[in-house]
Image 1 (cartoon, rainbow, N blue to C red):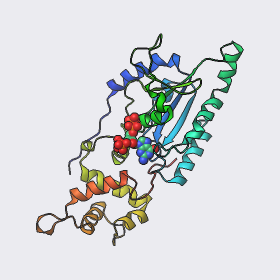
Image 2: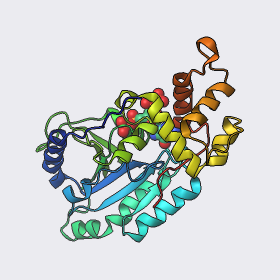
Image 3: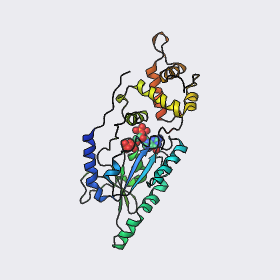
Image 4: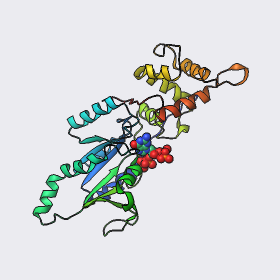
Length: 285
Ligand code: G4P
């Protein structure tokens, strides 16, 4: 199994930081979308520093695939750290009804200040930030609906920046540039790869699957055992041997009766990514 290190590209980040900071004067609030299954790894740790004087909020997306009890823990954790947070699901629209009220409540003081200056009618602008694949487009599409087509160029806004009207007086804008995850810590890259947020080729499938098995054996041993009808004790068996049993139980064989571990790895990853093994959150507050 080849070992490869996942790299993070500071040059790309510098470009995105510049693009974002150019837009910040136009923005009233930054809504960071993260993946509820991996709330640590799917956050860009530098974002809060870049937008430090702007109000922020967190949207824990894909909560349909995350462990509901853990999502509640995460929401509480963020609120304790004074970061407003709501769980959402772009597939069903769950949690969307909480978004605008939360935006208005966070910006209440700002709205009052604008009213005092006689600018009460001024549009509030929200930047939707997040690393690739967390669901930014899905979120904007669902909120903006048919208004999505209403893209216009504004004075002081570079051509091509898209604003989406989501409600009277509130507009959204997508992250300018690509907000890369920061995978200096190896587990961050691994967790992103488990969820399919970075390309499989970054780590070979078997290595990734073995690491996923190690993680699930620790956090969700019963769900793993049930899904693949395992007879071994996943808590004490070597993860690679668990992968072999998964392949064997699924009848994935190659020549001379050997288990096709690559196929087993691909199946396991695909099923984890689609929450077929169960709703799981692999990072804890
Ligand atoms: P991005 O703009 O941040 O890059 O993310 P995007 O909206 O493109 O979403 C990335 C993938 O995640 C898409 O799947 C999308 O359907 C899926 N997704 C987004 N939000 C949710 C959610 O709340 N729950 C679930 N289960 N999935 C979500 P895809 O496989 O790339 O495309 P497709 O399945 O939509 O065809």
